[in-house]
Image 1 (tube, rainbow, N blue to C red):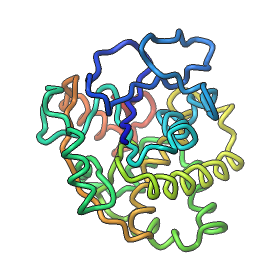
Image 2 (cartoon, helix red, strand yellow):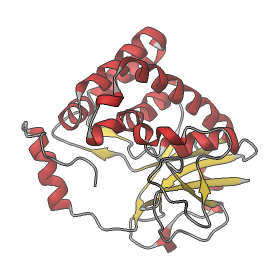
Image 3 (spheres, rainbow, N blue to C red):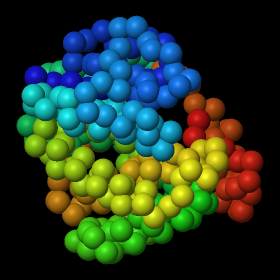
Length: 259
């Protein structure tokens, strides 16, 4: 069996195919009204209350402990899906057969890597976010996961990254990846004071996780195939690009990172 979780926090049109499972993230937060026809991430074993720090990863954690009988697990967003071509049409998202056929030849399905061209991964993160979480992550890998440090250091100097915390993989790889991911992030959380962070900086653990996917892939020599995104909302690339340049040249205050 296969389940591709769709992380969402508000009512939204989602695919009707049986493999796609909408899950409300942060369902345990006091300001969230439970959605109909949607699994809540505060059932079973969960970290729903931590959604403000982990973003969509609360759905990933829920899947780890509540979908152990599925042979393939994935995570997408209500606005972003894996597609056979880039479009804004849900008719173009991957089908169950296309996913299964792909995972016969590679270990992981990923979104097309984002290339920042004029700055590397480390600089891109530090221009957009507080530095403490990033350096805490580097220290955790140094102290507790030294086998992963070479990949982290090498990838930090590249301009490409697989973002959005989106992936699809077989259960055995999913369990290995999420064990690594949540163990590392828990150690990072012990070293930083998220309670006193403000705005998007409170979501640091979710942002750091985007950097850990490639680190895990490279260290464990996992193969992957990239797919374009089907996005249900169009991106204002002029606005996004101008915000990127503001951060690049030192105007982090007041700029926006995530759209």
